[in-house]
Amino acid sequence: MFELPDYHAPDWNAEILMQAPDVRMQKAEADGIVPEDFHSTSMYPEYFKIQGEWKLAEESRMDCVVLWNGETLCVTEPRNVKQGDLVILGRKEDGSEGIYVHADGFIQRQANGDVFAFRTRRSRETAFSRDYDRFIDLLRYEKEHGKIVWVLGPACSFDHDCRRAFRYLIENGYLHGLMAGNALATHDLEAAHLHTALGQDIYTGVSAPLGHYNHLEVINRVRRCGSIADFVHAYDLQDGIMASLVHHHIPFVLGGSIRDDGPLPDVITDTRKAQDAMRNMVRDATTVVCLATQLHTIATGNMTPSFRVKDGIVRPLYIYCVDISEFVTNKLFDRGTLSAVSITANVQDFAVLTAKNLGMK
Image 1 (cartoon, helix red, strand yellow):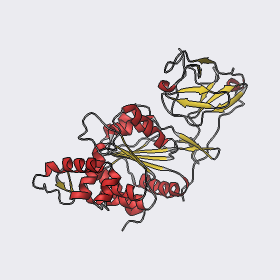
Image 2 (spheres, helix red, strand yellow):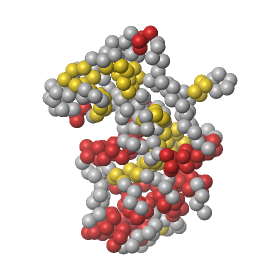
Image 3 (cartoon, one colour):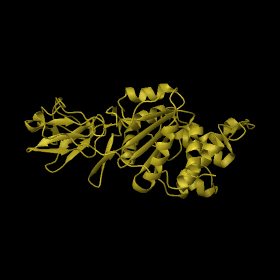
Image 4 (cartoon, helix red, strand yellow):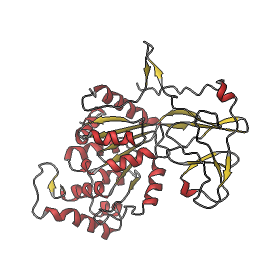
């Protein structure tokens, strides 16, 4: 059975933390402008000394600023800061300026004394059997105790068995929210409606006559219906990812890009609104699984911390990055998401294997 690792709080008796001053603050001079020497947050738990007491910023994420409203710490994007907000200042993170970034809260030691980090990098030469076992155990745990958000690229909609796997995951409670782009939804709806993805049969791969029109036909019909949900109901679609989300009332966020066809009416084309919607989706997520979508994976990683505070307990927030290219997983780490588990695999096989290990026949 899966068990969450214990969180080891900072040693508050350490001399530098005991002697630390209260953190400095300064009011924002105007909306969307923060003072010089502002503190920028990381993915780790961060504590701030205020009126002699160390306080944890419970809803943190990367590249944001911290505000103090007199009672609680608020982590937000600089563009959301209002004139007069108290912004926390300081660049030293060792406690000497009243700021302490705690990067080792979940690091454990094995029986032989070696340091064991519960999340580490993987490569194409790694044996992933143990990673799969841990992942399956984690999903079973999170089904009952957490929130699982999946971030999917269009490759997840091109294969018959992969779409069936996601239908199983959705119907059986292993997917509580989805984030993707226009392409994933378009090709999945094309598959449900016409049994093709980009004009190719999703099982045989054979191109249909004039199949290159199919995704454009689907976009047009969805737009005529007014929404993905209305299209699903109007055409009585039952299989695949988007139809399953609609039937089971699972929320999804589709963020647009410059190259989108259409796009579908549910796609958020304003990048700031899309970012806000994605942040809201992952705000209470405890496990995030990103499959075959480089830009959405990096975006999600940047807005996802390494921890979550639930019922007053600090626990890990697990993020998985699965891609057939090591470049994508390395790019995620390079952008600062240091706590992700990377698995180099074909995502269609990954989804099917996951669903089968969870009970799909």
